[in-house]
Image 1: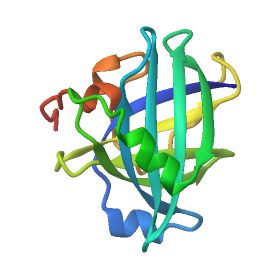
Image 2: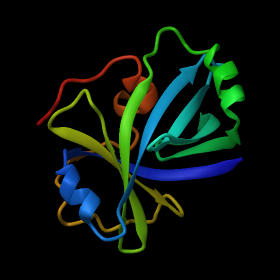
Image 3: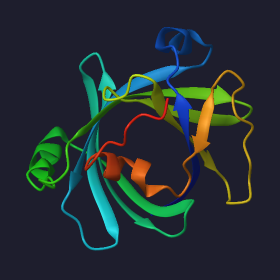
Image 4: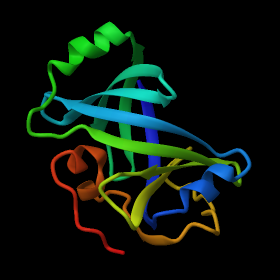
Length: 166
C-alpha cells in the first residue's frame, strides 16, 4: 500500500512533438480499464508501453482526502490482465491516453493527452505531503486546477467526458 498525494491541472494541450523533444521527457501509451469494485474504492488494470513492448498492472485505490488516496498497485502477467479484464465495469469505457513525463524543478510532471480532446489535456504532479508546492513548468498553460475535482478523474472520464474548456 502506498499513499499518493497529487495536484492535478487542466492544461492547454501541448505541442506533442515539441514536448517529446524536451530534454528528459519521455512518453508511454496507456490503456486503462476500470473493473467492478467494492463501494468506496476504484479498481483498474493498465497496459502501458510503446512499440509493442507492454507492461501490465492492477491497481486498487481508496480516497483519503481531496489530494490523497491509498494505492495498492502490482505488476501482473498478460494472462492475469486478460483474466481481470473479464471483470470490466460495463458502464465505463476503456481510457486510452499518451502520458508524457516531464522533469521540472525536482518533480516529475505527468501530462496525459487524450484522443477525445483537441485543445486540452491533464497534468499532475506527485508531492511528498499535502502542504508541498511544486513550481509549474513555465511553458505549460494551466487553464485551472483540478485537484479534488472528481469530474476529471480518469474513473469519471471513463463514464462521461466533459466538454472542452478551451
